[in-house]
Length: 275
View 1: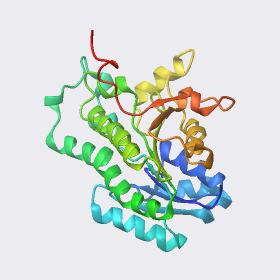
View 2 (view 1 turned 180 degrees about the vertical axis):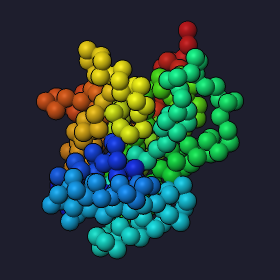
View 3 (view 1 turned 120 degrees about the horizontal axis):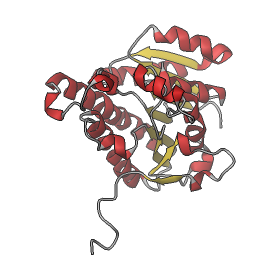
View 4 (view 1 turned 180 degrees about the horizontal axis):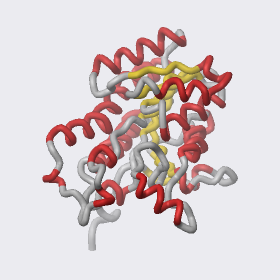
């Protein structure tokens, strides 16, 4: 499957850049959206000859008008609607609490200020919601589409000191389950592709990188590891894969992808209720 138009948010660096390059290698046309315009030059260089199928955009996706502009410019450049949306843009712990590895104890939720809470929720959940609500009607009209959300592992969502990053990703996790149920049978699927562990990206603290480098087995997932599961869930072969999550650190190219997943969302109580 080649030539499909994809939008990758947070697509100019880190995980998003790796996924953008992976999609380009497969022949897709990609609009990579970031918030730092200078990142565009680097990804264009890395794309090489594939840069002819790459559109780079700087936008603040927390603003509805900016989401509209991304879709308009993507359509104008590629003369068609996007059929793949990767919701990867996010503010990480480096933004929430830059000093977290130097603290004696984790930052508590009441120590965060209003601006941080609003910025993280708006970037990590609201922007993804706004982009999906613009993309899905186009996909439904075409009868085919793929929405991929990047959340995080459960113990990052609910551990002490994870607010508001964890709750913002938990919201997107639950939205994935809801969206998938509402789109069942339409030809449009919604799935999650995650690192499954900390990721070696610009948002990762230097202290964690040093700890990973010193470990017998690296603690951090490399951005390129996201490409395998991403390319599977956007493929025609994944047409019946809807409402699942795939973790890059559990991905094995020589195994059936459908054995490497679990449902998106949360199980709050055992089937049949508590004893």
